[in-house]
Length: 299
Image (cartoon, rainbow, N blue to C red; front, top):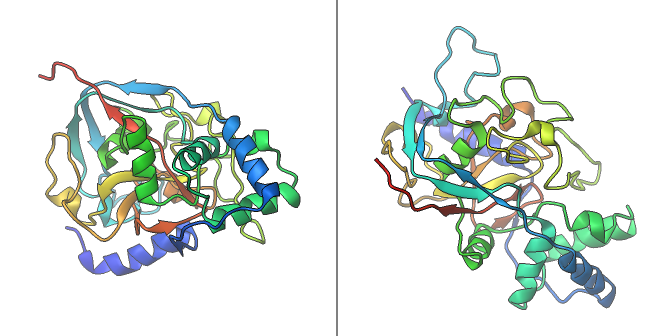
């Protein structure tokens, strides 16, 4: 049985794990020096391929494991219980997280300046850490609100994946514990557990760490940045969701965030671990990828 009394503590712990959020604000005009770097980063952007995910069922969520309460298969919390075998129609999803370069192109197309948080980060890593425009363009997008992520996907004739679509793409039809299988995460599989004294993100290129790919070949479904999904986050949704193409709750306070980030502990990298965040917040630990439905002859 789900213990809903645990939810306030769960929500707080997840937000702490994701990192400190800041409220959405329009970015001010960058300095000429920074503006030239932003333009260069955008000009270097290149999109990734989308990967088809076939129609079919997969194990969504986790089983209770009372005989092994401290193992990797132990649910993070009750929100991922009970497990269902859910059918999803065919869809396709980005192989890689949306890159910083792609995000800056999107902002430029709409004559929007990057948020002040992102501008501050870019100026710091360029001038203090000497990170090149070529490297930054392949960083994952970050400090992105849910609405911005949703709008960028819509501009590509796509959308954010549902939470169920995200999980199937991460774990495959057999229900992997982590995208790559059952072995515990390490630095060759995922970017996680990082710390910088000034809270500077420690990120990998969106198309890196091939050994950590999901069964469908997706990069960074665990770590690097956590990812927005389309659904409202429902802590009790698994108790009543439909078992065919679940769309998520009709309303809520938080939008779903999946996959863990560069700061996350190992448990957040599990393919079934769930969490949420306010859709109007920006974070150095949250990015996204896009998905698109495929028309097939479903049974």
